[in-house]
Length: 402
Image (tube, rainbow, N blue to C red; front, side):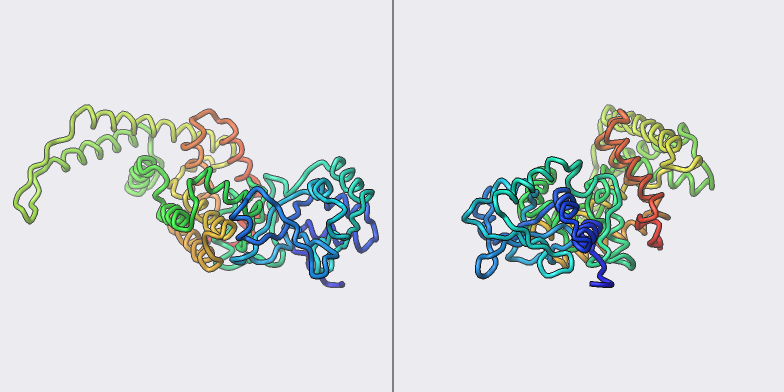
């Protein structure tokens, strides 16, 4: 079909191989692609370990879809992610005569499923050098996902995770790695097992409540100093200002207060507790300063740059959390769109550019995971930042910040 726009590079490769009649190349591409098998949600919820074949009417074929061809999620049908090798091994002679790949589109193919065919699938799988979308690269839906506008902007706020996880950055109708894997990821990393838990996790991220308030406090002190003095803030000046602010706060908390019940006298906080907080914030400021020094050396910050806020780490995760709710069926597409738009609005309110936002996201992630080791948590954040700020396909180079 002339003029057909493939949803992604996966379907484009399959379509071109089919158009040439090059079936070995088609199978090569298929072996590298994730194949999603439709399932009745109620059956999967009852037994998540079991994958079931649901043949087409008449029983002649079994439909599977590549990632870009997945239908919009609905409440009753879910998809399990499998490989071509899995189908080759799971199939037997009682199963349908054809594997229908992306039925109903120009890239469709009906593959015979005889034992020799399945042996050929395994051979192509064995020869494949990769499987699924490569992690660390920008992947987009060319149809079926917004590329411009407010929703696209909110989706791009979550691009750090989309790039590092090897997913389409602009897939609002998210299936992720399949229904059961997405539910397991939500349980393992977030403790979320139902719709109420998902809504609460999304709310916390939208309100930037998941990042440490101590990190944000330290950065807020510097923002005030930079505004007052219209220039760079020396680390010792920053530490002294934070210490002074903490001491004044402790003194004010012990002042008598007028309440409906009369004057209330509050016991002052123990001196050791206050001194411990001050020492901790001083250490934190040194840690932030060392990360920023490394950020500047590696191109994550400009030579005179500094991080305004770490709330971006929550904003980026909120954008993704909204989509994870769709993949797990804990939320709807409408919920996801509202969540993505709010993530974009919050990020714009806190930062001045994509690069500014990214530096805040990376610092939050490193403060939480890296512990100044400058290991995988740091290097992966840096690599994703550099990809998103330099790759011509990056949404950050194609969607204005404001």
